[in-house]
Amino acid sequence: MSVSESIPVITFRNYLNILNDPSAKEEIKLKATQELSEHFEMIIQSSSYPSFLETSLKIFMRILQEGDPQFIQENTMQHIRKLILEMIHRLPITENLRQHVKSIITMMLKILKTDNEENVLVSLRIIIELHKHFRPSFNPEIQLFLGFVKDIYTNLPNHVTSIFETSNDIWLGDLTELNLESLLPEAYSVKTIHVEKQLDSNSQQPTYTLLPRGILSLKVLQELPIIVVLMYQIYKNAVHQEVSEFIPLILTTINLQPTVIQRNSTQKETFVDFMGAQIKTLSFLAYIVRIFQEVVIANSLSVTNGMLNLMANCPKEAAHLRKELLIAARHIFATDLRQKFIPSIDKLFDEDLLIGKGVTLDSIRPLAYSTLADLAHHVRQSLSLDVLIKAVNLFSKNVHDETLAVGIQTMSCKLLLNLVDCLRHHSELEPQRSRQILSKLLKVFVKKFETIAKIQLPLIVQKWTIQLWSTQQSSRKLNITTN
Image (cartoon, rainbow, N blue to C red; front, side):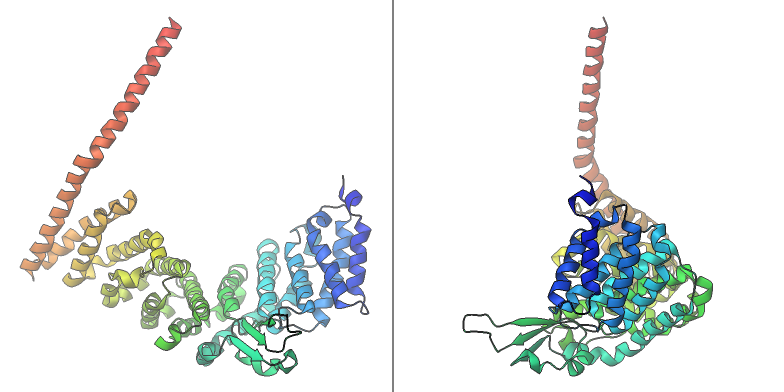
């Protein structure tokens, strides 16, 4: 059965007419929007899709343009606006869409500045997808957008205290008491509104959800770096200067430190979002560090202090953030900036700082060890004997850690061997300590060979013996069958 036979396209046009009717009730418009969204894949596969696209985008854009942003998640109009944005995001990337790209991007950029967190996050995804696939020509709106992002970063330090000291729960006697003008300037994440007035004695106390403005949202702030990177990739020559101006803002952002009380407050989700925004910003720096290496190296102390503070403060339950932090560190260590970490590298050999204490963090241990090994390998000639001893102690333990993959154990062995010459160099100044640590290294390798000989080698021999026997048996059967 074709699309037109199962649900006539004219039905969808009726839904669009309802959306376009100023006199239609919001509940009816929501139902029409839901029907369009539910059957959207069917619509875009129909032969009438090109004409549907033309009509629907005009109506969608008008609703987004003329409608007021909503900041109560449960509002009917908010559901309509979000569904419309999600349908725009689901539009297939075809030539039919190309002529509408500029107008869609213009609308999305407007939504970034005025709408709520939910809608702005969808708008950002739309902007990213359209730029990735269509690479529209440069226009002044891009510079305005980058200026808008810079303003968000510039204002962030002024908001830190409010971010953690504003309660996530709002209590009202009645929803009519809600004053958005006073609440929104202090809303950086979703807040729950408790209304004490009940509809009747049997009903539960109603709750609503206050959505922050996109320009203050910590979740939106986490998504901004990647879109700036995308703009730089597409419009490199046109926005080079604007992107360079982000560097001092990045350094300020990664060095923002909530107090101990704020970190341990009940608003754990807010703190995780704040850390996420900082780590995404560090990832942004990791991308542009080679492009603006001289400027970054001139401010290297801010980079090293910021990264170490992020490692120290990263919540133990946020393994995904720790992983992203280590990936960013790995990229930064791959540049000349790694020399600037030498004065503080001893701190990185503290596993509580490097990996953290959470149970879920075990999965990122290989990434952490390989990142630290790369750094230690490249700067080994400049390391003090105390740091070299810490390196030997940590990676000697890894050589015998059966929970680590063979590749990580092998990497640890290679690093230890590369440290031998550095230890020998220090033996001229501190012969006793150097001799002791070299002796320990020798014992580590002897013990590893012993383990291989007693445990792993017999298993390997057994495996190949069985395989050889199996091959011989198969050969005999083949010979019998042939004869």
